[in-house]
Length: 400
View 1 (spheres, rainbow, N blue to C red):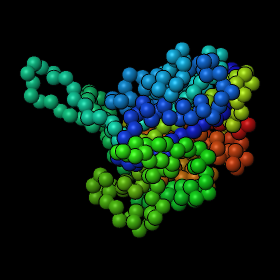
View 2 (view 1 turned 180 degrees about the vertical axis):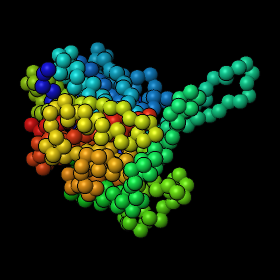
View 3 (view 1 turned 30 degrees about the horizontal axis):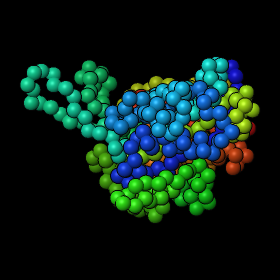
View 4 (view 1 turned 45 degrees about the vertical axis):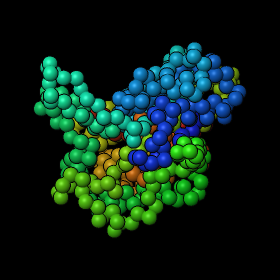
């Protein structure tokens, strides 16, 4: 196995649903960080790029037909550079980085661009074909997030709980209170606000020029954070799944748009292309869990990865865990033996504050982890996400 290094990386700001990136097609959105990495790394011989791998969860609209290939060409990469799109739902962006890691580690590639994209705003409504001639019983389904075209056999055996329902399932089964969930959500907002004020996100975010009617608007900062959030405002929100639930819009991630990309390289490629490594990829692991409590997936993925690496959670200086819901993050932290307010878990806030563009989020976690290790002189970081339909994914990095 060869060493694999994460070098430069960049992401767009994260847009709210219907917000600053709403007018940008998913394929154009994915092209933005690819083009920026090409601009910033002029020493790279881009015709020698072995692959582009992007994660995307939807792929039902403008992100169809292999959005990684579309974005590569739109970004100006040579036609000879191949591209592939991978889908592990919420963890698709991290899966793409793992895909690139394995290609390079096994000698099948030396230089890969990896990342992810999602435009949840522009996810289309879809309609299936008639199951019989002249049928008038057509149903339109929303592809933004969650189930569509449900298999009755799957529903009967496993259920088809919505993502907020899985979070309430976790909260009930593992006894996570509403107060604890809201307290975690507030910390996410406060940490993100502090990091933004200190310029942390400016180091990993590119400005995007967006057409707004007859003028262009510069979109340069994440627009999902709500820095004025208070514990009282969170407590006032109604539960999403009825009065007995505890999951609200305030302690859950949003629906968002964004794209992210990083450069992964072998040791030989570092010299050939004049690249500076930021972190070494140590490995990645996935795990399956019961779909109705999909949020606990990171506990099992991290455990599997640490077993392979012969490491312990205490060896790590940083944990970037996707905040799909406060409830599932708290269950995962407790399952790993970490306190709810652990200072080295999402120290710059997470998806509750920043947003969660499905295919992008895993790549953002890895990029943020690499930046944070450099800033704090930490040595090891974990990035992990829960995944719809019952999975978890985890990746480990070492600062170089």
